[in-house]
Image 1: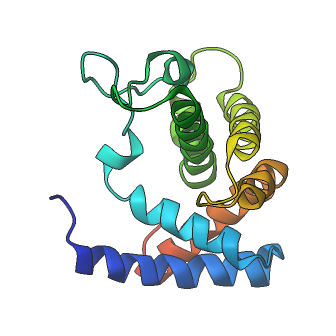
Image 2: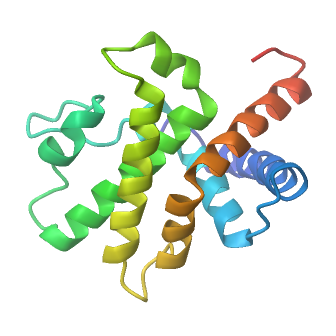
Amino acid sequence: MYCSISRRSELRRLFSGLVEHVFQAEVGLCDPQVTDYLTQMLTEFVHVDDVYRLHDIDGSSIRDLSQMRAAAQLGPDVDEHVRTLTINRYIGDFTLFWTGVYPEQLRLRRKGGDPISRFVTEGKRSYGIASELSRPDEEPPAAVLRQLSAQFETCVHGLHLVRENFAAQAGGHN
């Protein structure tokens, strides 16, 4: 295991405080379900294996956004509904993470066009699809995924501010 449970708990508390402060005080998005979701996403994406958790049929990590829907393998027991929901939610998380926390990395990997606007468009679309596929008893609730889709750019801005606040507290630079 690459990150102990207690370490993740400490990081989760740190991220929770930063996300709640930034989104409530600076961004004006005061939905605890959304801030809890973003905190969980940041905590999960601490390790690169979680950022790139989708794998192709050969077991290789999928790092290209254009291949995620087509090539991701979730296992033989996963039905198409769950597969589509899981992949769209992941793409939403993946695009939100990169555009909000590390947009400069997207600019460096530029292969044509504006990668940030492509990620924003794909993230909004993916969260929207996931919200439509989400069943009433599933977590996160469809309303959270809908809000992430509708307020994607606001969340990108908020995550960028979280990164800045984190860097300021750590005494480092972005």
